[in-house]
Figure 1 (cartoon, rainbow, N blue to C red):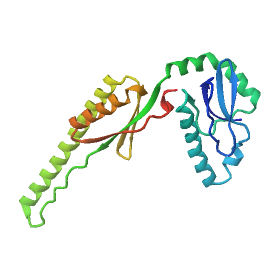
Figure 2: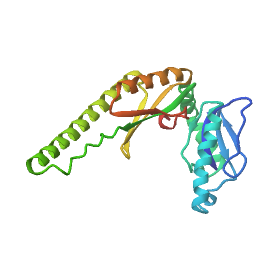
Figure 3: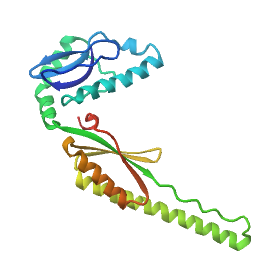
Length: 221
């Protein structure tokens, strides 16, 4: 049984359409599982196009429900062998999941991207010869080294500022040179968060900082 998320029982919840059909809630002890009962893993593996669209729909479904109630999002492809198996799982873990949902009430995940600013090009003139040329190349290398050192020091300082202001953070490391930091914060404080990011950017010479939209707490469940 394909499962998107766990969530508290909520009156008037508007369920979106699933990947290929309608969604249902399976309820046990004040806890609900959002499922698409007629969706099989075999269908998802029909083609690469089907798989990619399914990944996008999975995320979209969770986001739409998250706009209405707290959720514990599950990974794409999460399936239980049977309805009974899911019911038993909910019964065994309902207290744990409900505690997590209570903790996450009103919270959202935000992605901070830190993109390194490139060192301005310093072209060594082709007219330079001999010692003058090698001296210019040495200065160019020293400038590059100093820039990289300053960039790394500023990154560590930024991370300290972020951790001090927002203790619930997950750092995943750099991908394609871009640092990604996920933080958990009250959605009511989003304007303060945006202001804080602007202040960090004003202090930063070596990094471009961007803030993503409020997301379900993928990295905090």
